[in-house]
Image (cartoon, rainbow, N blue to C red; front, side):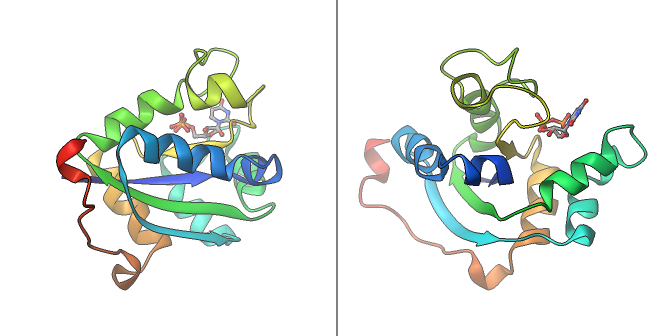
Length: 147
Ligand code: UDP
């Protein structure tokens, strides 16, 4: 069983799509193990995006991601990391296919409304930036055998 870090970015919160995004992951059959609305600090943002340090868009990205509340979540399920990336779609919303979250709900870079971890290492690292272990809830859904 895998866990991934999913975050509705400030533009997604402002555009009222938190519920729609949660709904897509729920309907797909994944399990929500943690969630909170938070304003992330510059230090957290820099850690989260450390692979992009020094790139031309880095400072703007940190400003954007700290500009308002985000909705941070951890989702669990088999192959959830890769499947969530498919559900999210390409980084540039103009290239993201219809049917994906970015393809359906986002218009233009850099406002692509959602983040999803891209590997098991990133998922573990990112979850640890935004959540304490005690905030991650272990439980099994009664419907687990049907998904
Ligand atoms: N980003 C940007 N300009 C770029 C590339 C990325 O503003 O040229 C932002 C965008 O918000 C993206 C984030 O940086 O979601 C992280 O980039 P990454 O390549 O990791 O894409 P993702 O994993 O979010 O699809």
